[in-house]
Image 1: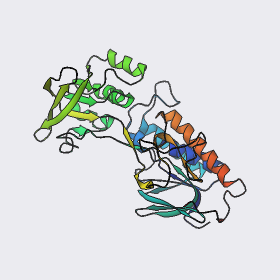
Image 2: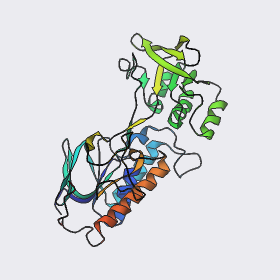
Image 3: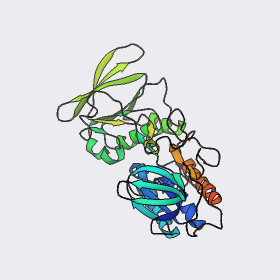
Image 4: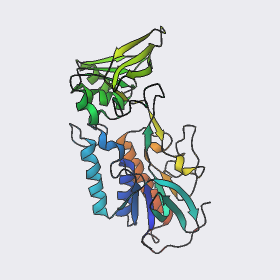
Length: 320
């Protein structure tokens, strides 16, 4: 193999990608993980992780990410920091093209994850970094003694509301739906928090302020009444968009833009696999994403064949 020739290239260094790379390397594959953010992905910013096996009191993403990277290093996984721009088929497998990094691999595991959706309302872009945030565990201390708002009703929104409640004088959770969609355990913790309020059937119309956020314009979806509430920080958790744009039309996607896979994490293109919340029907739990990664790695190893792992590049049919 050449310097940039690999058995398996893993796109994405989150929980799914790192577990895939670890499993692949432990099966003897020369594996590389490519990610623009480094090991851990978005989980690095999570204050407390409860949906991954570990200590009863949970752990932080800052602990989990380095732990997985250490395991990957010990298994012999290589890393590259770059943004993947395209993957194309060759007669030997696949070419992975980044902004600065180029490599070839016989198999590819896409674990590129998702990006946070935006509200697309007045003031959101204007106040990004000046009161609008997507990381309460990062920016929560800036809200000490102030009023903050969380937009969203799922696990991430409630996790971050709890993290904010340790700093803010008041946290208001705003959700469009009739009820929250987070786990029952998280909802119970929210109800127990003395300084967290929940507003259901409510839409955010605009983010307002001068120099920084001072208020939210909201609308009651049942009555149509519009009003403003004081707010000095807006933390937005309204779902995720899969990071699949770089694939173009190379693999089949579902209606939400996520990668269609079978039970073995195989995509519509032989030799390309997908894992984590970038794939269709993912439950978006870290434990499930870790399992996806291991399944994809074992499927990739079986696709290559045990006799070919770690051997010089052979010629395969083009993936198109």
